[in-house]
Length: 136
Image (cartoon, rainbow, N blue to C red; front, top):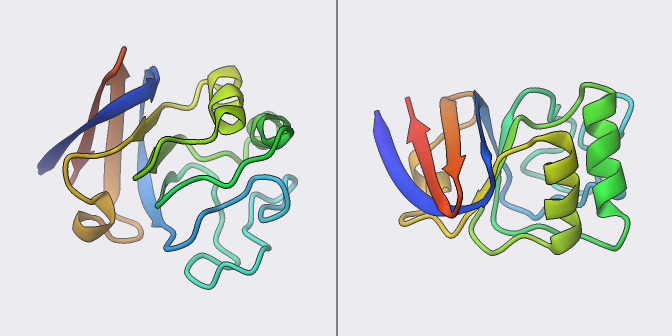
């Protein structure tokens, strides 16, 4: 197991298989809410399902309405169980994650995408601003 410290953004604890995206995922337009599949032009994750995954990406692409789409993914049970980003996430994505109870961490001490592969079990735990990512 590898443990990496990160900045906690949304509190909670979740685990699931990694889904590593080389591109930023926009919940508004890149993801089909009813299926949870990536439909946008994102070669590294095209057609992958977000459902039950720990989504790892360099940064978020949000808009004022991104929170609604992330929350709708949750309501349709097609949401990622946690989100890890290298950069501070867009405020609208954070709002959606809070409403959906999806833990979010950013700015990991070392790049998560270098240590984790698609499908590998990842655990994210956030207490306040203290975040931990465990890779199994």
